[in-house]
Length: 187
Ligand SMILES: [Mg+2]
Ligand SMILES: [Zn+2]
View 1 (cartoon, rainbow, N blue to C red):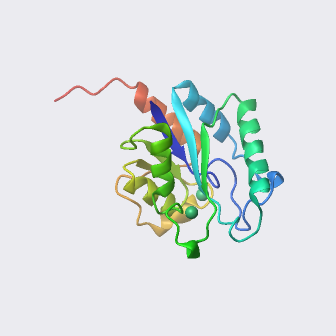
View 2 (tube, rainbow, N blue to C red):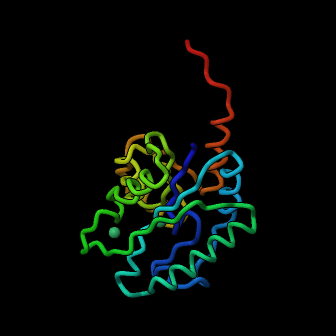
């Protein structure tokens, strides 16, 4: 099974320093949902792992988050994209949970739920903690420069092997092109 794990805010949809607190504020980045459809067509299952501390901060509640994710799913379906699952951490940093990225708890849950090892699984984020959580889980980290990505790139300290792309659409194009390229012959 091929799988890819995506951060949500700043990767699939525009991020906001004020948090995404309603379906109206959830606006896809141009090309991101179409990129997910291309991943599906290439046989990838697409899973989201997202920190949502706005729940702990009481900026929105579970019913709002469900409504946001309903919009995400229906918007995806409109372009033929399918998101297999959305894992989220509702906690704040002070809660010291195991699921909030940069910790690997959500990635471990994904591995259990889908009964798949995460070694070599591509993971895409716009924040350092996305890439760190993926890296310690054995995933291959990709940074996108949408959302907080440009700032993340400038700050540096990225996990070894991190590749950067302007956005999810270009990352997916490169990933699928790589996969379709003939294997290099041994020297
Ligand atoms: Mg993000
Ligand atoms: Zn958590």
